[in-house]
Length: 320
Ligand code: VAH
Image (cartoon, rainbow, N blue to C red; front, top):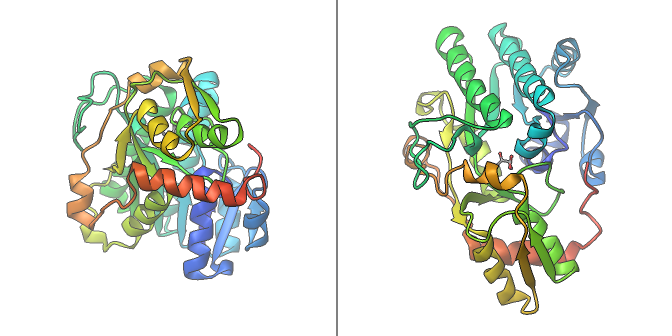
């Protein structure tokens, strides 16, 4: 069976539903610190689980004969700056529990998400390369950079088959975003549809790497299904879909909703966004395991508005 820890989060929810579609509901165990959407809870086995409690995690793995773990639980960049110690403890504690279970051969494959947050203000910001200077300025970015080093160490020293992707900002409609800096790119759709206006917490010209959730889920499944020898980078792969600024996505939304108005009131998240790249080079993911993105800005805007219009208020669960 496959265990998804953090199954009720922004990525976890859609990843769990996709894995259940592919492997069958009962082969995918969803686990999180709290319950999730009605759809998720009704679709297969669920366990309330504290990702930092090693005996609880081990019990779930043994009980369900878990072979693979997707560790999607983490505290993201913005929230992490409000609770630095908790972010470090959760992001690192949960990773060590899973890496050690694999080292002890109690599970045999891990997916662990990294992020563009591993890059910092001294990183080249345009077409950021796979290998480059990384001096992250957020606790979240520090935990992801350290986590990458530990994943590579456990692969080299203990043969642990852990695979990782540096996700850009992710855009999705099925769940509310969870405390990230790129969340404006999700909030903007809800506000455009419900209020026809949006007060953006980033400057108009803040370019950030982004990806539509469907592409991110497919990338996650593809890196996990790739033959072991194709995964040549065991820290984490750069991955990119598109790159845009708040004013660019606002202009595209206005093509669909002409009366939409946006204004800009940057808050503490501006400094975080300024420390991250504007665009990412993902040639290694394309070369090693055949990655290619599908969604661009136009198709993302169309798909988001179409789905939110047809499900407004119903299946968008409340912020956790
Ligand atoms: C965040 N959405 O904003 C996450 C992600 C690259 C951004 O790590 O923290």
